[in-house]
Amino acid sequence: MPRFQSLISNGEYIVGCTGQTVYVYDKNNIELAKFKDLKYAYTPEFSPNGDIFIVKSTTGRLAVYSLKELSLLKKFRFSKVDCSQDDGFCFSPDGKEFYNIERHIDSCKTALSIYNTTDFSLKKRLFLKDTLTVLSDIEYDNETDTYYLIGFFRDKVTGVKSECFVSKLVNDKLTDILEVSWKEYVNCTEYKNLQRMGFSDMAREYFETNPDDKTFEENYTISTLYKINTNRNHSF
Image (cartoon, rainbow, N blue to C red; front, side, top):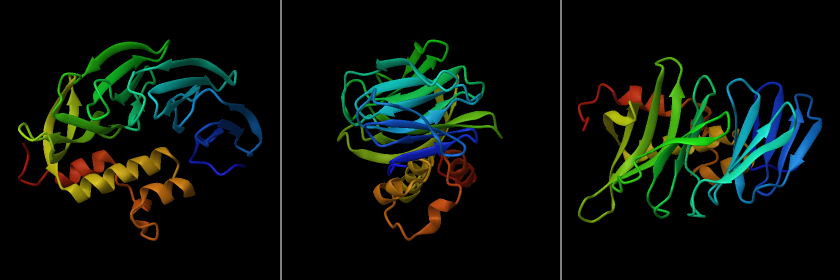
């Protein structure tokens, strides 16, 4: 196998990304297919039912692949901003929707887009005009049946980063917003990046501030961070 930036498995298939090439293997590590549809593509994810997987490029593009046909289903550009598109994404638990954090106005401003996975048409785009809220990652938590987001707010006057936060996403709005420390924000977003990239050796070299620290072997998801901070008296 090549040395992968990302290497993930759903038990039946393995997907590896080198940045320029996407490889698909079966569970016995036999190569089934490889694709060169995207550049700077490092982060793949399987749909919950395992029939497709997506790969996101930092140039503002998504590629959708069929695992049954081992073929490209769709490739599209989700933003004209062709850099810094390395924020989080997730499928809905039923696999019918795909949530993607995107940068549209410029590389410093974010929005949350929701796509219909039958054809990856855009259903809605949230927070596009909210230039003070910067979203970093999103996840769905089965235990609480809730989407959680992590990010930070910019100061209204200076425009610089002020408070980091975790929150729920309910009815297309950030709700029950809790302040978190900068260290908590960094640890959680690094863990999410590592998780998405399958904790590959290359991902560890890039994201971990201390590769010898085993902190990221532990579960440090957004929902975990939210639960840790729920009882603290510093909600916004």
